[in-house]
Length: 261
Length: 261
DNA sequence: CGCCTATTTGATCTGATTCAAACAATGTGG
DNA sequence: CCACATTGTTTGAATCAGATCAAATAGGCG
Image (tube, protein in one colour):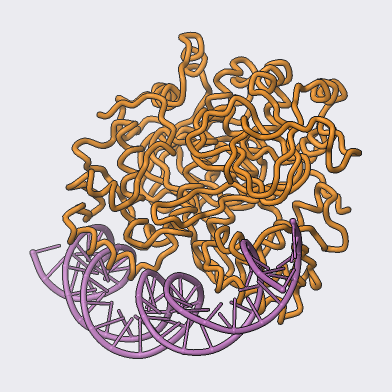
């Protein structure tokens, strides 16, 4: 977690999944939130962006920064987090390809949290000016992005409920359900199996638990035959059972299109 | 909590603070987030709205509803909350005059949480259509509202950190700091004293604690000479001390204008 | 192989919950 | 204005979910 964006190496050519065009990923994500016209897709394809690769565990933006661009995650895995005085960390969200974790920096100039990669990742860096010009030209597209920030807040809200009022067992199951559904939506899940490059400590920091307790809870969930989880891969062995265990109701994710890959 | 909006009595004439013009309250709130032109203020003053009074503890919108209007809180006190399967409640935010707790319904048609009054309150009900027309005519105003939803999310985020990683003592102190600062911004706080019509159970549900523990924690905070809190009035006796105890850094509230009343 | 990081296990402790009951405040109807 | 009901606050005691501390094991990798 040593470098901020300006210090990262720029590798314009080496994209992890070369088939994935950044603009198409963004279009897919937005269409998942609402309809886009041909004209709007065209404008999105012309959006100015720079491609950047980062290693795992690199801060991409830090609390207090004043970014002048936003970051579209193209490949990899990331999270937002805050640190508290005694060194404890709370992860406030996980991010997957298609997400723009620092979209809020467009309207809230100074970052109130940090944002880092959890796996080697590919980013598209888009200047604020380009985004604002896009919004000016296509207010309907701005509304879709707005919608995206609202869904983001809905996820915060659901996490809050989990941390505040649910048991460790339920919380872990709920998190796994959420991640699987979100990964499905961008085609990164088949057969309820997803790449999940997080440590048990990351999960603990996301759910407000200790690492030791997460470890024991995982054993419980495994013991119940609901999941496999090792070496960065999560598999839901019993999807229905996992949803029940996690009291998972996916409506809070507000998907417009229901499409399972 | 028995009536939804459609069933509420309409009292167009009886506003609690007659001096407060709804439009001016809204303008003040938005100018707190960023600048408005004279033209924009003019448009805001013509915004179509209906005034409604509600008793304490009335649901104004419920999870699953599809509202066709948003609600500007003019006077009183409100909260958003979610219920979980075993009947537990998590309050996800408190709302004070100037807030539009259900603004998200503009872009997320179905409510994923409920929203209720905690004290007798005055509301201005504004049709979605009127808001969208406003956004169409004045995209800059839309951006201010967007900014508002982002600050809202920042507050969620901060609450999450508290519930996940802070002690009961710190959490309660932090909540009190937040409410005092927000009330100051709309002129509802003088001498660090605010009307706070919430029960200890409400506080418990907001902070992910039990009522009993909130009670004991309040005694601790009182014992430390930091606050008085009884019969719906909170007074910070030692503001600096309270901020320290709550590890309160108000930057997450992203106030543009720093004006203390 | 040796190093580093992540996972796992055991033992102990504690902040917070739960249950139950008393008490205080407020409001209501007669 | 009092009796009573209702809701909120306070107290005590027992319990527990999850934290903490410490140490052992397992993987991954240069």
